[in-house]
Length: 137
Image (cartoon, rainbow, N blue to C red; front, side, top):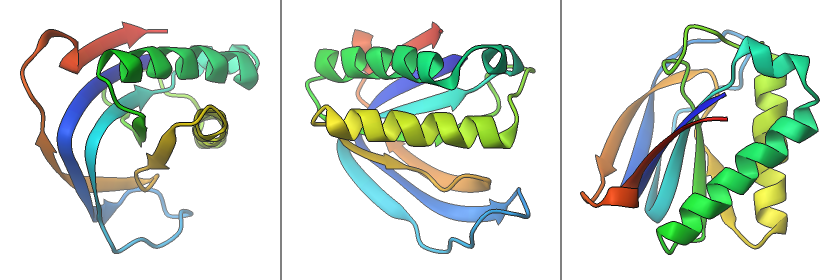
C-alpha cells in the first residue's frame, strides 16, 4: 500500500467523471478545512494479508500524521496512481470502510471521497515539513 498524505487548510472535490460503472451516482462535491487528505493506493500484494491487519497499519499511520499536523479530520481518497499494482475494488473499498470506522471510533472526524470517480480537486496546502508525508506500508 502506498500513501501520500497532504495536510490541507482547505480541500474540496467535485465529481468529474465516473470511472467504475457499478458505483453509486454522485453529483455533489464537498469542502473540508483543517484536515489531512490521504491519497491511498491499495496494491495487489495487500490482498495476500488479512484486511484487518492492513487497515490497522493504515489507521495507525493516519493517526500519527493527524497528530503531527494538529488536526482530527481525516479524508480518505482512493488514488490509483502511486503504484502500478492495484488491489481489487472489493478489497479496497472494504479496507477504506474499515479504516473510516476505526478512525471514527478513535475520535477522528472522517470522510471518503466518492469511490470510482475522477474528481476535480482544489487543494490549499501550506509548505512545511510534515504537511506532506509519503509512505509505503
